Every structure is written in structure tokens, then in C-alpha cells.
Length: 90
Image (cartoon, rainbow, N blue to C red; front, top):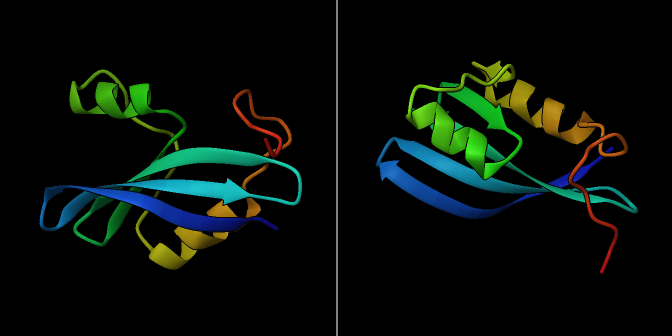
């Protein structure tokens, strides 16, 4: 099970944010981005280019939630072992 921490929040509007989330297991780390739309719709992005392309109408993420508890459960169980961009402790 992963721990996850919000390390930065960018406010697009008062009720719309992009959150930078650090996912961490015992040996791996990964950054993901979550677009929080008014606290009731959350989209998960694997990298910043996906976020940029989303706002340019060039990308729609496959992972989205309409419940913050389900988002938290997803982040806790996110598989860090098979990701292209993950880091060992440096």
C-alpha cells in the first residue's frame, strides 16, 4: 500500500486545482497530477504533458473519479512497480 502526499497545489480558479501528488512505497516514488474540478470530479494524470494536453483539448485521461474516497483508494493501491517513471530513493 502506498502513502501519498500533496506536495503542491496550483489554483486555476478557487474551485479548480491541479494537485501534485507524491506516491511512495517502501522502495519507489512517483509523481502524479490530479485535476480537482469543484471537489466532485477528479482526473488523474501520469505526467505534466498530459495535463497540458488536457487543457489544449488533445488528451482525456482514462482514470477519473467522482468521489474523493475512491481517488484516495486508487492512489493507495497504485502499482508503482510497473511504471516507466519511478525513482528509487536518491
